[in-house]
Image 1 (tube, one colour):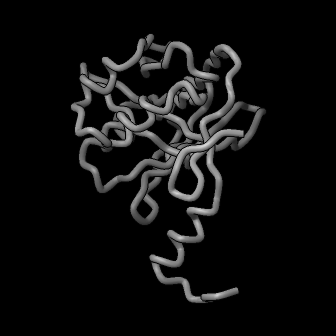
Image 2 (cartoon, one colour):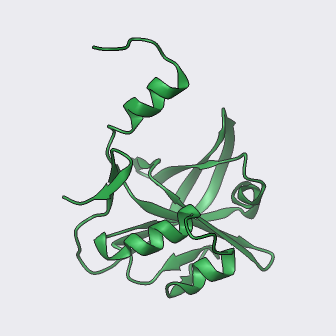
Length: 163
């Protein structure tokens, strides 16, 4: 081990070595939509089906995730790389422009789901917990949509790759 400190830089460098499946987490309420690229999403339980997603709470637009009562996790394949960039903020697109880059349906909860995602999880928000810089969104899965098979889009070592 080269550096055993827990400085923010060392932590970020270590997390860059942690491979994560790329998702777009979405929500909608009151005529507003929001979506962000994320890798911090995971299953919590299958009985009842429960997931969590983490979104940065320092971006004031992300407050909609905690307020809307719904969210969707849209799992991306390699064909979605440009969409992942758009929802990560690269290119400076507005929310409307980001959503215009693909086809979306509204789920049963009201959250946007990506047509053609590898899988989409429609969630009723159970809890939004503030932890450090992020909201941890815990959701009961009320609907699942499976898309066409593709290789997963993975984020590793500060870049995209696949398996």
